[in-house]
Length: 426
Image 1 (cartoon, helix red, strand yellow):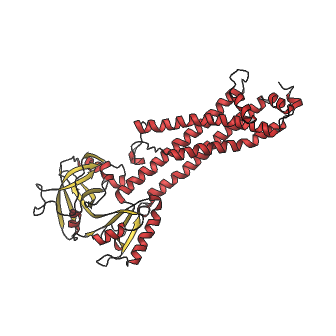
Image 2 (tube, one colour):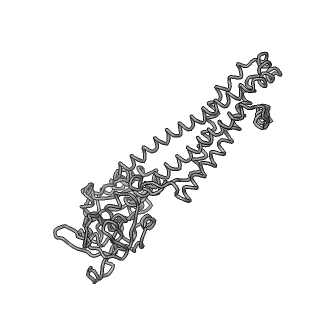
Image 3 (cartoon, one colour):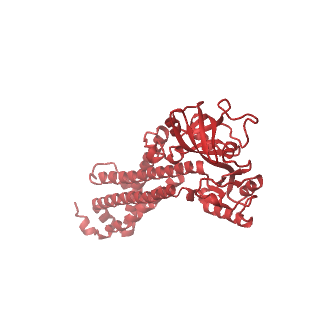
């Protein structure tokens, strides 16, 4: 065993009460490292949880990339595209695209005997990925959606309503429950009325979605718009890797360029990423990263300053030992390494307790949801926390390395201690 490490272990392992000053300093330094690491772990877990939870909710309703008619941009799907099997196959063959699904939007009004509400009816087909909707259903169930008339030959009526899924916000405003009948009015060349039966109620806590969108069959939305069976407002594309979203979008544009960017009806197609559709949401999420860096910097500084103060106290208290070692021939480098190893033991214990505290808070929140939030402000009802063990391990390594680096300068104090003086020091 190297001599500096041996001496550091002997000093750190002393349990007598002769060092009345250094013991509190060691405890304070350990607590500083532990608290700093715990705060960093919890902060990163909360920010990652927020970013991924909000991102998943936005993607759940808008997908990663939308392919639409260029004339319908900003017009809520006023112009259709032809999404036949060949175009869907071409889209799914693009590198990075995992799934393509049709959707149609139609603006209408839901009306009961006592109230009414303007909504956007989103029609989806059988190929639509409904995992997000199923996860957010709070009452009832999600029906099997179709792009064909579910009851051919039967006219829509109170006795033969179409299935619909509405939000909790809509249900509360219109006083509706699962199984209730609701009429929707659509205004175009003429006013049309369709009967729906509430099959399910969802809740995402995203006001921009819960206030507007209800889900029905693609056939119903197309019928409302007067479109053919192979027409729709657009296609929603899901990608394999969200971090490669821009690159996948470039592949889509390249594909459009090679094929003339048109569907079989001659409509010019364009792609819109989720960042372009909801820029304010993602700008807000990006601001969270700035807060994280500020907090990480402050916590690392806290750990560093507490370790510096602790090390200086320990060096001053060990003046006689330093003088004795120098009298026996030990150089400044050996003594500095001894105290740096001593600091590593302190930091290590602080990291251990910091991990226990930080991970304990995360697991407690995930199990109980004890920290609740206002969903109207934060889009979630409880603070989301995400376990990311590789990132937490990186925080441990960074804290250890930075804490040791900031101690290199103060450790040179030992070079100012001379054997002749230190041997008389009390």
